[in-house]
Length: 230
Image (tube, rainbow, N blue to C red; front, top):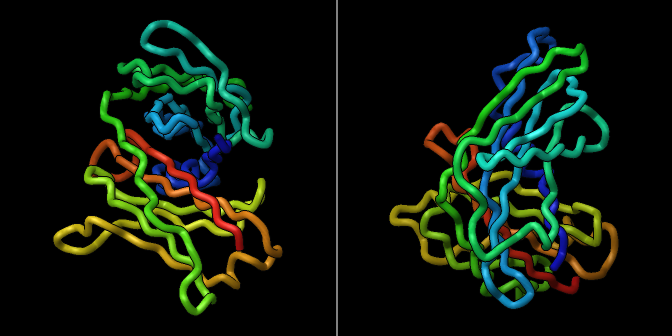
């Protein structure tokens, strides 16, 4: 099972702080927890909890305490101090969803101030989309990914990786048709992907379910991965 990177999701979460100016002196952060679902090697859907805290103010450390009282430290992405989140590994997933309830985040800012934030994790989950096709077009100048729509999803995002290098990222987009389509597709010019040469490209399709129509905090995501030789 390939590791699924969360940086693109963190970018979405950052949008919730778009009203906060970078020059703002008051320490403020956004803390969010959501359920992530993937298919394991046996084809079963498994789940885990993702925790993310972002701030324009530099943070020293962030810990999160579960409703059951277990506390973990969140990794500091790239040691930058602005984004702390856990990147789940396969061992973090289980056949049952993570513990629901209120998660408490203790954020220690660079100036010494400590602020507590909370976010509630509900039981709603999002099944991984079924990718039905990933192949070049008949003309050979494009590549298309087709998938069965997830009925409860609010949006999708697509990331293309070559090894550990991100070669394409499409921010969250929604099916704007009425009624919603049962099957969706996304096409890319081959030349936009293969600048780094031929090889295996991993298409990571992520469905997003937000907590509300404010589209800021995330309730659940699901990721499906399929590879293609280009």
